Amino acid sequence: METLKKKYLFWDVVDVDPKKYPKFVIERILEYGDEQDFKWAKDFYGSKKIREVICKSRNMDKKSFNFWCQFFNLNKEKCTLNRSANQRESFWGR
Image (tube, rainbow, N blue to C red; front, side, top):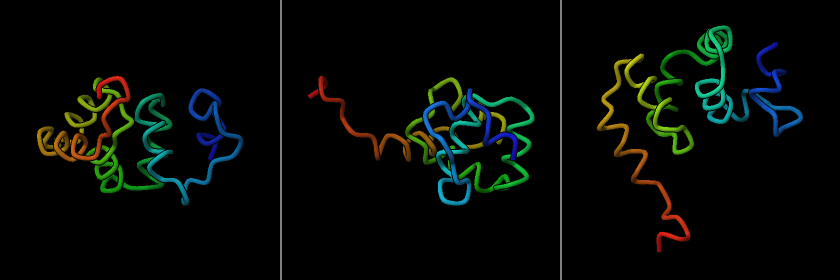
């Protein structure tokens, strides 16, 4: 569980519960983590859960999203629809 103590992953939280907040933990690892962090997430959550988070995430940047869709061979268009269907309009875009 050394991954959960890394400040570059969880700089804004004191203690994170990986069972209670899997989406948050997976998103942070996929965007900012290294190979060890990814291995930990894969062992802890499994590939199926990670794929689910990628397709439903609205917080992951485009570069990370594209990379992980390619890595897991996900249908990017289907995932993009899932992501954009839930996005809120920005305040200044109204």
